[in-house]
Image (cartoon, rainbow over the protein chains, first blue to last red):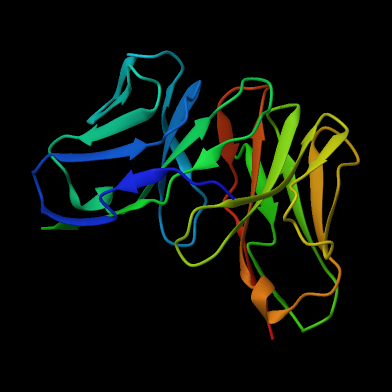
Length: 112
Length: 111
């Protein structure tokens, strides 16, 4: 099935650093969701975006719905060890289809 | 305050022996999904229900079936599990074309 391109694929950062990751597509999306998944657990919703250009924060996390509607970005400020995990974006192309396409994931490792 | 509950969290079955995974929700959402996820890959949608309307993905094998007897419960039946079906199975819910919430998943092992 179709997947969204997510980058970077993985990253190692020092505790306290800021992190940026993005999700891109050649298609237009109507909704973007960002999830974090810990090993052996289900994805946990971090931020939902519904309009082009929308910028939304959740604590140290900030996500943006790209103005072209073909991409989205997630930033984590002042990373801490518990930020480690896999981050997935998910986009919904057509409202009313109730289906999301997932990104390939960004694996984040934080070095204390 | 569990919202999407999956049981069991770990399931072991034998090759070819039917297995059923269950999902329940306390959110009263009208959409329920089943995903398969293998080794840190992206979740792969198997099928979803909008109320009682079943929507199968074109590439979901016939070996996978689903039932939704009421709003709260949804089941995934694997009729003859193969070694390649070992994976994490994730249930999710949504209220219409809105945000999607996942359960904790069931890790299936096939011996």
